[in-house]
Image 1 (cartoon, rainbow, N blue to C red):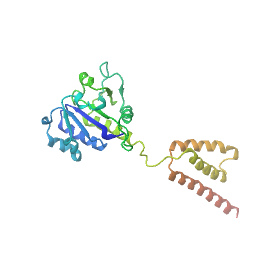
Image 2 (tube, rainbow, N blue to C red):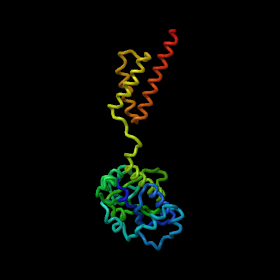
Image 3 (cartoon, rainbow, N blue to C red):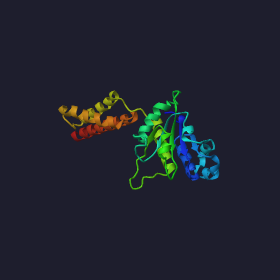
Length: 251
């Protein structure tokens, strides 16, 4: 995912404060490009800056357009956000995580310097959302599930949710460690069962079932190397203490 190729498009937003909050939501998720369908002179930059705080630069570099079509003409896809389904509402509406998968494929990778395409996510006016006519200018639809009793989301909240899913998709690989392979995990399982057998926890015939149990549960835990070594030390120490206690009682 190359977030530098993601464009957030706000179609005629009413509230300057919402624009500022949307800028902040974008900055939280490393998305910098804002496009607004509307006239720049209709918005109070000071009110926007108050809510944007340190993300004011996003509004200051925003581009203004006369239509969604103009704002998205250099993009490979224009995803209109809507919570209402219907014949004129793009048929299938993607969930945010589903759209993130599409965006990932289209934008390419910033780390690998791939020549990916620009994508746009379009948000409607706070009061009306995107109309059927405005959705026709988009190429697909995205929906954020919400309560049937109170389904309307604040504009900046909607921007935050979509931006977050895109950010998470880009950073899927940043787990902080590489989970162990099953080959390495088997060494930990062997260490655990060796030590359990030393203290008489199970008979020799029960070992295969015990190994299968530990292998299954530890693989789901996606252990790091450090965590595996710590587990091995725990069971090794427990077996050592048990052996020491047994020798002491025999004396």
